Length: 427
Image (cartoon, rainbow, N blue to C red; front, side):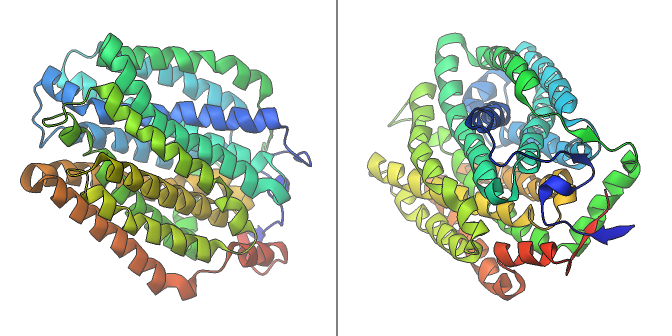
């Protein structure tokens, strides 16, 4: 069954409430903080790859498989768990996933074999991703139309900062307590945020006639087939996150070896410079709401490509590395926020499914980037990694230019939806 789509996310009839005119600042901050803590779990392993390689006897060429296992968990979450937000009580769903995530973090910390490690990080990727993207969809549905870009942008900034600070946290705790301490501390942090989430998250009315779980999952194929905005922005996300992970999955290897020999906490501190880029790009969602989505995308992709020049100079100057990180994070964050702002305006009644499908592109790109960059580093060194990253970034820019005429601006898509010229999937 198909019905005309609504102009406001507040009117869709899956998990629905009439949102407040302006979301309280404390709730916006909670969405950002919880999203950041959740996503950090997915990235703790990246600065710990050398320690994991040594502890479990995994070679450098194969250690990227730990990241790949995490991304497999991400993909499963996006396909099987995130869509549940369009059918179940989101508040209870978030708390249940949080508790299971804490258990999986404990399993990783206790791992004594490679198999147990891989099972644990797969579970962390599964639950960490489900919570993160579920909170993004939650924030979008709980906000009024006029502030949706701002709220989603704030939550996404929390995700990006959490992603960056994950490396600092993992590096510092690992130097003090070992890599296992990272996962035990994270489990404690997740349990600590459970009470604020339970008390402050808005209650949504669950539709008793919501489609069954099999139909809910099958409807994602319909969305993927019909939504051109999702297809185009999803492919841009795949290429962008592949380039992003090409850098972050490889940087620990040269910085931990001579002539640098940096500790985990020093390597993780390099991620701090990316926070400036993340905060600067937080307004990208508002620019997309005003119809500047394509311009923002073009600027972000150019920054992503340019970043690889100073990054390639790392062996001669660490200042060049810092500049490259700022450009990479600024471009990546701006494109990511713009992508989500444009996609979430297409079908308000399917926010969780849209987020799940979009982030599936992200998971595939991240996994390919991680596994590709470790193998490239072994065979071609740091310059080979930079050439690979620049090539993927250039491909993303070329793809954007080739598909530009097929991609409506966010403002136009929202107007089409509001006037009934487009149709939405019945949830």
